[in-house]
Image 1 (cartoon, rainbow over the protein chains, first blue to last red):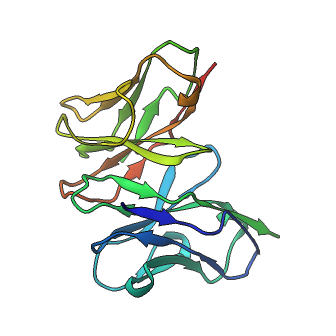
Image 2 (cartoon, each protein chain N blue to C red):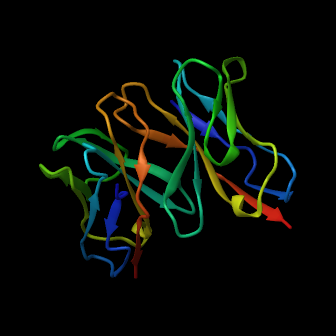
Length: 114
Length: 114
């Protein structure tokens, strides 16, 4: 069965520091991969997605992610974190032929120290 | 273009009651998906509709049902509410008709069951 693992429940970084959030997936075929961000009391906002092609994808707000098939990973990165990046981040895999069914990881809550 | 709207934003019900939540997708979007978000289970897929047809369903009891209207607006209904149904219910819409597409989420309806 498909699954997504986000090993880090909480991460704290200083403002201006670099960030990497880990995501590992379990899926037999080429996956559709997504990163979403959720601020308190809000819905989910799409940061970036990978469907095929270039394995390094650029998203909004200065985020990027790299698809590594050999490691079944899709880690999210940002070179310099801003205080406004504090939120919860979700990695998700879309099931091919699954009619928009997303399987989400448990999320990583990011805190940013000034 | 207006985003996905969900009504009501907050709802309090008692056990045994039923509830109907509404979702209006982004104009022109024909696919609507529903997710349940709880602290214990995280984000879980409920069902997806396209052109008034349910194309996919998650692993939830029959008390959870939905429908989609000809204008793509969707409703979900939960009958015989249980305490465990307390959650944030998120609706998402997708613009195209492939089997997997990016989804745009609404702000959610916070349901509290007492």
